[in-house]
Image 1 (cartoon, rainbow, N blue to C red):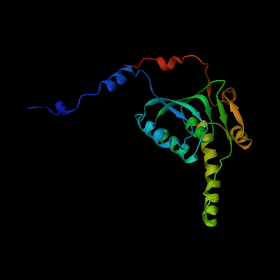
Image 2 (image 1 turned 120 degrees about the vertical axis):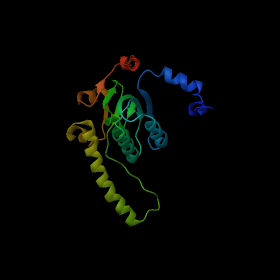
Image 3 (image 1 turned 180 degrees about the vertical axis):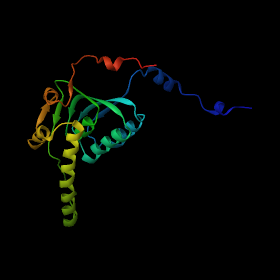
Image 4 (image 1 turned 30 degrees about the vertical axis):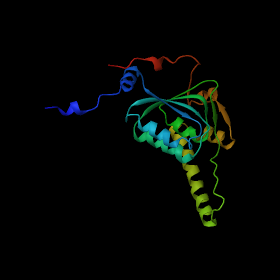
Amino acid sequence: MRSRDSKRPPKAHDEQEQDQERTGPLELAIVGDLTDNEADLTDRLLGVEPGAECTIYFDSPGGSPYCGMSLVTLLRLRGIRATAVVTGECSSAALWPFAACERRLVTPFSVFLFHPMKWQSEEHIGIREAAEWSRHFAELEQEMDVLLCDLFGRSADQINEWSRTHRYVTGREMVAAGLAELIDLKPLPTLFEQPKP
């Protein structure tokens, strides 16, 4: 008589190799427009075990504020302990998931664009729908501004000033404002640490 375990298909060879090769936190990349990649980004974040660590690399001009908020929600509700590394740009709606990371690493060449939220509508939108969208958008913008400051753990003055003036901020400026840590372009020791037994 066969046991239940004997009916399970064996792990694929590639899966076994990946399990053995993985020596640190899971790594993900947020690259390009958030809106265009929302389904993939959501799926990849759901692949991180609740409460686990991961490293997220950012090179994104932003996208939908709803997508940015969704990623923040997944990070927070699942208790994911993420380290952000900005390899290029992290702007607009990408700032929210960046700010939601426990640790934020930037290089001197990292770039961040802060600006007020922008919106556009369909061409054939009714006046009532446009008025309701305008009301909703004004509230959403205020709430998102407050949330961004809360995620960064800083007072609103500097962040709101950058946003109001559509400011491109460098990695060094983010560090000076206490929002990130500066790293050099050399291997990060934490990426090569062996897992604890």
